[in-house]
Image (tube, helix red, strand yellow):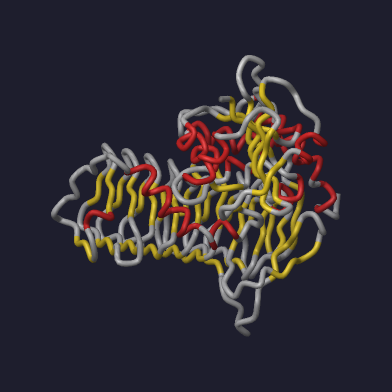
Length: 396
């Protein structure tokens, strides 16, 4: 089978700024990205049906000699749903109410009308990601499912006796090359997964559910409350609660983040803090890109949403429900506004445009630290985002 994960326009908009730089299926929730979950379940590689500017890096692969399956990219797979998709014949699909789930095109292209008229109702439950806050809100449930998927039939590496375990030891899974010494792990609230070659340093306190990605480091004395996911190649310290960090990002020092989503290639300076609860205990509004206005989440706890390549200086204080775009650089005293546009430079006292050439210079230095380079395709993606987000930088 050939799998193509397609983005719905409205969902893609609701998941901005995280989806400026990636298709919906590249969002990390639980342990894996949505794409990685589908690939594990269906035992095949996936491609993308995404925004035009992203196709340079995330192409669509349609094959003529086998059945092609279009699947809604914001849906989290489970065994029952996967079984239903495998049973689809050419020109058949499934939906749940108004939610499109999947369609088998066979080896021919189909029209949108064919997809819309040939979808049967799916009887099972469907788990989907529709808003940015769903990523941390639903992370615990997805993390448990990913833990079961990744560890089934596998044996964990031994956990050093220098660690303290509260709860069941079999709910801690240590991949090959991972290290943890003199830490406390509590599995009474959920499973704990330590990825390949990751390290949990001495004195760390971890309450599950929790996932630490490949090559990532949880630093000395860190305090983590689940459900929390730290993706691959990250360095994280201080206090973290119910948050998701996609990958290649650092929060290496003290400071608190809670009910927060951090994209890739971000850096939080020492003693950066996020508020995740209003003083009046009211519900929290987040900036919505589609309406260019704030949207009530209905949540009492919501911290920071930070797009890829954004950074903040030491002692930065973010107010409840702050949304930061792509490639922003925030510094200075006081609380910056709760909506910080993409490609800006400044803080509470105001912003200037962060020139693309300067942003590229910084990004190349950051990539070099990981023995990587900023590719042409990624530069072009960022150039498109820069142009599309001009309207949010009112001074230009």
